[in-house]
Length: 347
Image 1 (cartoon, rainbow, N blue to C red):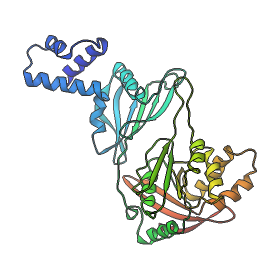
Image 2 (image 1 turned 135 degrees about the vertical axis):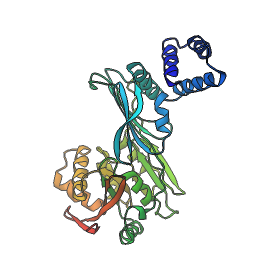
Image 3 (image 1 turned 90 degrees about the vertical axis):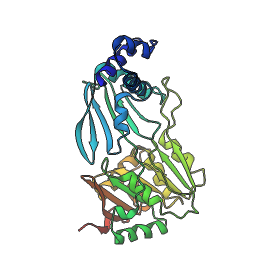
């Protein structure tokens, strides 16, 4: 039946105004009523959703979907990559790209060959097309999976106690780790321990946080339109968030000049903020934040930034992934000279 559904879908792609039931009757006049219904249901799902990959998006074991041009669709399950049973040809892939970018108000072409966005279910999507994608289009979808994970899933009770104490003291905490290590999930768990009487304002490039807290205000950046207007970058949102009476700022990920604005905010009374950064260790996280802050400053010397960053950040929680397991491996306090000192760690 799937091959018949493929034939019907290809016909409808070439003739979008055609009646699917009538075309199916011409392609396979001997089908039973139930068989016709099954084929039409498959094709309708493909046309109204994201086509053949919808079955992967509905699979709770799939965390990422990767399409490396026409051919098999790859998936990540439990930390391991493998090709799925689904294949897309060039026509199907082009139509999938259109269905991904149009609803999020983006355009992808030779002038703008790379696009990031967020799907309606919260999943992150990245699309790259030629000329930068040599064998593309390439599509990567990181599925949003709402995990209600407690801190105890990341580290033992003595480590949880260190984090709880930092939260109570309004320490500014940075979660560091590599891609897919569990930074966002850990940040959610930490924010869930904040006093319910506090007001949290989250700022994200693409909304992934699901803060379990009674008083949350969420802000998300906006890319420029196809005409090149209307962009609202992270730095602008951070500055606006400071005018919204936050008890704590929560930055989904620091990746640019907003590190400077965060540093300034933390050093002018907005303590207790939470954020994440890509890094390979706690000390690397601090150095990366310094470099990002330099991008957002006007010729401020590194030593000045290092001193201010050391005063702004109190604790770094470094998380790593080993297979499907995600664990905090170190909690490091930031010292006045910009070094880090382990408060807790895996021995």
